[in-house]
Image (cartoon, rainbow, N blue to C red; front, top):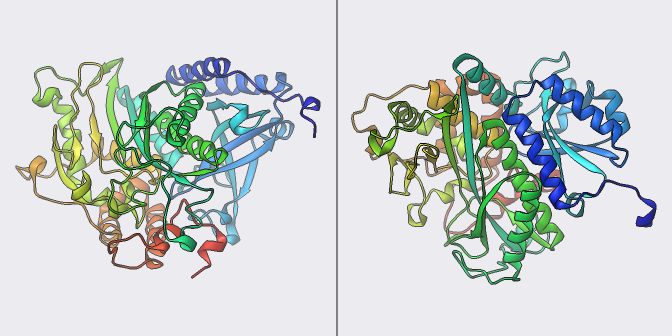
Length: 476
């Protein structure tokens, strides 16, 4: 169709940023959900240039799914959006397949038309059952309830920001074709902080940063990382559910931009042996009435006792929650001490091999950094594990807990065993989602060589939960 016949919404990047920042502020201010919903529905009704609404939800393993609804249909049926849950791994069986989507109108985004297509807006959704009750395998909904409960009961705001590393590889669908070629090809070999203006990696980083800025990410810095063709694009803190949403958007933006450039953005934790892997360092804090509860000028490393108890609970349950933070066979290649891997269950202000690091902070920025998180983990599950454990887990009575010579599992089989055996993981997820999640991880692991060895095997990419499709899964 000739473009001049279309009358679809296409907003300049500056205007997109204004819209998205205004929506973000509503979310920070906790504007009543019914008021936000009314405003969004009125906007969609009035803005004739919007033709479709992209609804996003996340499965149990953390894979992002998208459905495009015709705007007119959505306006009539927004309270009854159904989909086939049996087609989503870990959701429902064929005999009880129908699920529904509950739109979270506070998580509403205007996206650049040149990247996502014109005439569209995006909104996140929670998954609910046939009867309208929360669906137990929808971890986003579980995280929202945790956040709301702490705010209502304690006045706590749970804050998070993530440093997400990725690789940029030559060619389209490089991950899905890995089993054919057995290797990934770098687009840049410059290394840490080094990429010339206009080269493929710098062009990619610049474009992603522009899209993030337009979508209200409030960028901080971006740069090539240590490994060849590796990148990291940092942005500001957010309330925990919004922060997890931004992880999903970050990865979506990176993949979309890379595809438009004829390349592949990969968030496999260790796609290439012999160089640093990809991490998702998770910075967290808790505030109340604008005050950072992790800060204490006179405390150890200037952290409060409240913050140190938070740390101790995470260290106590380190092995229990490892599978929630490192969700794939490939993730256990990254937990290698030769490449700054955070595989030691301890806390340190300086040792980057520690599971928890204490960054330099002040009254505003005091936080802890959970380093042993892979970027392919379900972001809602990561946030749930970190915050619910930090605020409500047990504390071991070991005197040297923060310096103990204990290590995280170096393979997924041990991680699955710890996860299945721990009563705490049932408290976090509920017994049924816990069982489903463990079974999914076991099924992928059983399709891969049990020993990792010294090079990446085709199967650990082919059967990865962010890579596989029906065709690849059945090549077994």
